[in-house]
Amino acid sequence: MMREIMTRYGREGLGFFWLVAEPLIFCLGVLIMWHFLKPPYEHGILLGPFVMTGYMCLLLIRHMIGQSVGAVPANTGLLYHRAIKLPHIFATRIILEFFGATIAFFFIYVLLLVLRQVDPPSNWLLLYGGWFLMGGMAAGVGLIAGGLAMLSDQFERLVGFISYALIPISGAFMMTSFLPPSAREIYKWVPFPHATEMVRASVFGEFVETHYNPMYGLLWVGIFNFVGLLIINAAKDRIEIE
Image (tube, rainbow, N blue to C red; front, side, top):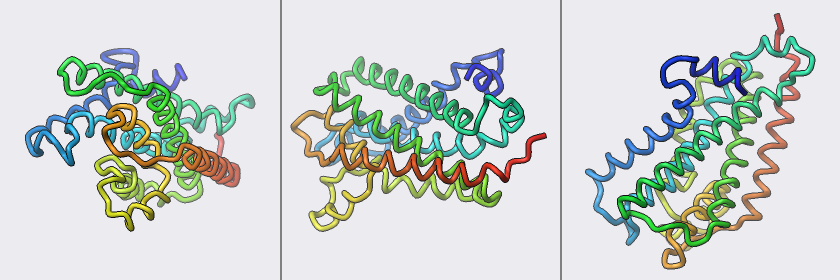
């Protein structure tokens, strides 16, 4: 992990700070843009915490995918050492991305607290549960993306499209309660909004309608990670170690 930090961010300048600064800058940029383009409330929900809870969850998935796709090409030489395996390389990037996004989430939350845009979490267990649930799903999707990138050089070109496709299905800028009942039941089959809604349920409290099933999200954590490890195992023979 220390090697990954040094090779990605260097020993000089801001260095490791960029691990936190990158998601922090993205989220603050979206918050500022929406502040000027949108009314203070959306569906009776204050804009600042709505954007913070949704966009940070979306960034967590997108960064996990982006870093996992390039994990093996950037660290192929490490596989020369017998003690280092493919899961170690992916785990390093996944842990670092989760750590950076978590700290960025904390800083933005504190900022909105100071600005009196949000209250302290009404349920800490829901906040931690939703955030770690999203982290688990993001890790699994990252493993799948990294494995597919090992199988096909063309897959990397699809990463941008996948990142945009995640916007409507991640629950970042839409809550399940915004949908009509018929569409709501279909939307609940998508796993990502369950984690996002758990985070929002903690931040907004009982006065905002949320829909989530932690066990359903946990099931998909297992599915995504299991499938991802299977794909990586199938693709390991395609790696050429110099």
